[in-house]
Image (cartoon, rainbow, N blue to C red; front, side):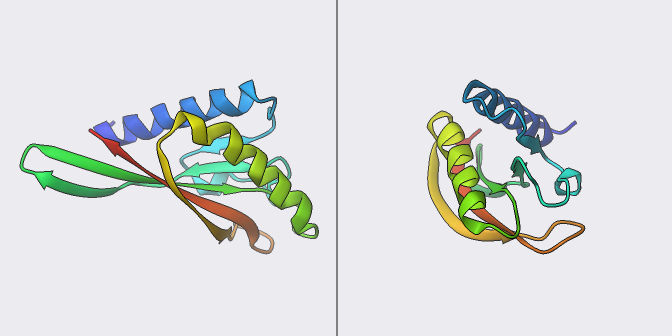
Length: 123
């Protein structure tokens, strides 16, 4: 594995621990959005590949985006509440700078409500 895929797995483990600690046992944490079940009934966090910047010749900064989504599709208030609970569980452990409303289009079914969290991880 490359250093960034290893870091993505470390981030996934950190997030998984945070959601379990907050009692959100059904939340799926993955680096593969195809693993999200239809409707994401308990919620999901997808770690996306980072955007890289090179402030100096010897420094790389990785800006990570985490897509936090949840269902049900037919009740946006319940989905929003689940998403907020997940964000509240993981944001303190990461240096999150922005959380923007988004949507997630799973393999099957309609798009789900989501937040796109951004943070910079200096390497």
